[in-house]
Amino acid sequence: MESQTTVTTLSAGDAKACRDLDEAALGGLWTLQQWTHELSEAQRICLGLFDGPRLLALACGWMVGDELHITAVAVAPERRRCGFGRMLLEALLQRAAAGGARHATLEVASCNAAALALYSNCGFETAGCRRDYYSDGRDALIQWRKLT
Image (cartoon, rainbow, N blue to C red; front, side, top):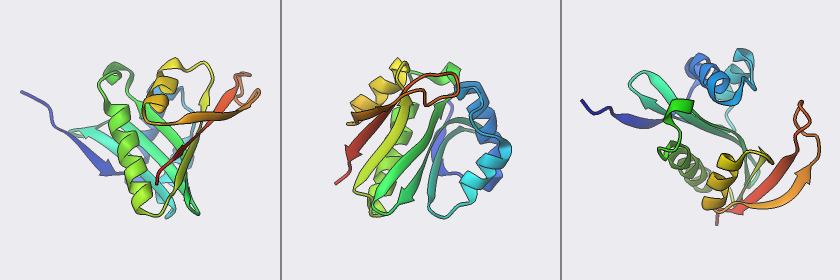
């Protein structure tokens, strides 16, 4: 039997699923309280890809003026390389553009080859570097993309 995946707007009721995926995919960057806040704010856009009740991937961002600041993109480790990250990132960019965003930005670990490839394939370019950005001393690359 083939599974059905659907993209949906995430809400505060999805905070635990987001935290669990964050833990599995990103090592637990945010707490349950932070996820609840993220999913409750009006200027946030958070999209998820579900297979039945299970959250497989998510992409979130903040609308700040005419800019989308992407805060999280995560895919369940066993479902990577299936196009889910790209699907959600493109949906997030489209939703932001429809809401008036003209640019998108994000930070990504300079050593995260898979994420860098995804962002490059989606039109992002590196605009700068934040040294020692992450708690373990890794650098973050600042990436930008025009939406319109």
